[in-house]
Amino acid sequence: MKPLVIIVISFLSAFSLLAQDRIIKLNKSEINGKVIEIGSTEIKYTKDVDGPLYAIKKSEVYKIIFENGKEEVIEQNDMAVTTNESARRYKRAITTRPFSLMTGYVCFGYQVALTQTRAFVGELGVIGPKVGPAGEYNDNGVYFRAGYRLKRTPEILTPGMEWGYNLGGFYIQPEIAVSMFNSKPNYNYNNQPTEQSVTSAAFLINVGRQMIFGDIFTFDLGVGLGYGGSTANNSSNYAEHRTVYYSHYLPGDGAFAATFSFSMGVLLK
Image (cartoon, rainbow, N blue to C red):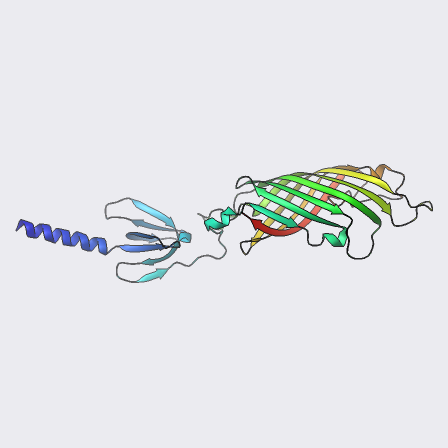
């Protein structure tokens, strides 16, 4: 009699193990247990009747196969920040300003994520190349910008979201901008065109947002205000105030400086 009881208990135990729910994750791994609750962001389950309660994010789950054979596919929110681990490997970006040739320069930028909330951003421009009609000045030289980007926490739509991209999101960016070029006005001043060397520098605080599309393309839009100066506006060679210095703007006679940038590029690992 006793051996029969042992056999029955073993059979019932084996049956209970086979009758568990199966949680199929996006990476194809499985979790066996009893699903207790399917919430808005998490799925709660136990591994045995008297065991502790566990939770897994819905964004990591493909579907649930219940013990009665029914299946429920977990819908993923397209607006959610991705939890794809491969996306987080993109920690660098090469960028450029697509409309720079129209304003008389070409540039290349480099970004590298130091942490999830910190990044170094640099940009080097060559002043001179231009597409379209000649401007007020004929300039040739270089500029550079360098900044330390402080990125805010992820844009939370629902609880439990994680970082998708190291470089994406809203940011504040202190930076320095320096331009050095030779400038020759495209008009006669006192009947004599005058060429001179121009140096301008500014310290700015930028705010902006960087967006990622298609897991590889980046678009960055930002504005900045700060303090700057220029040798050109202190020179008698210029008949009027100059505002454009490529890396930044000096819109007034004082030390007020500003910048506006739109760049695009590709992510790198």
